[in-house]
Length: 454
Image (tube, rainbow, N blue to C red):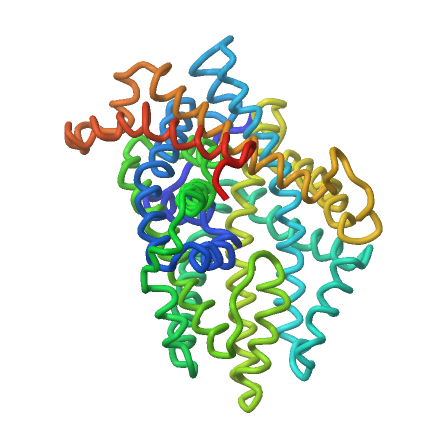
């Protein structure tokens, strides 16, 4: 077995963990949920659930990872030998492969649009062209797979270099760049004509839109936004030093992730409202609506439109890459440690498997769109399996494992780092881990399977 790496600094811990959480969903899903859920009212509810639900699950992953000092499966095997808790680790590794596969398809689209923006291919089009262009691209049998492979190669090149020289090093480069671009684009969006309407929509609470379904949506967004419950933070925290303060790290990661999500709202809403378009969910917003907005808004300033478009898709690409690296690492660490393979060979195996599975997901938008399993195409099947089952069940098992199975002294030792956390805060965290987070996750899981609130 190869020697395990470790993060070399607290900054590396925070940036890598934040990069794992920050992804494409921060850029388009969060603003969409805000728009549907009453603007600032949704944001306030979301922030409450970040504190009550998502951060406790993140702390559970940190505790399991640093205590187990192994991959997602190995950590449970060490902490609970011969017990069924290992199922949570198995779900994490399986989820890592599935997420990396279908996520990289959309990331490949982002890479394509980043290159198209850089080479000026998005300029000089009619507004109605973008829908046809996007449909033609994703339904092509080969082009999306080529970009999928290119994106997976970028991810592979980072992961195979290890923790400090690979993941930490590139997180320190990519995360500051991501934050700078996010802030710049938000500042520029605020200067657009009609931006005030978008800001008002984002910040003015509309309590009439707040329903039980919106509350559950905020709960789910808080949970999934931080990528908790799937084991990537178990894997990352297995590389934490004993000096890393888990509570402080979790708070910082939550703050950075939330900041990027909220600032993304300041990019999306002023931009689309400036031309009278409401944001809609999914890829259509990013690959059809926004190119049209860039065209309409900057028709008399083509260079500004070119720059805005390029920076926006670069931002998306960085967000996609920081998340895909963590998913790749879940699988790479498992194969490397469980099968005693070198990191380079393990990373290569993960990349090849993900390319095969990702190709099936990509083809489900084209030649294989009529090929279904249990009524779903491959892309939707992988997405459904992870978001509806593996993530919530994994998060539920982790909170129960830490809150009720692990020795209380071990948990307190990991959380306090030698007394750095007050007794009152420790008691509150234990209540959240043992009672509040499991109940919230169970509500989300049951409502996803048997929708009660619409």
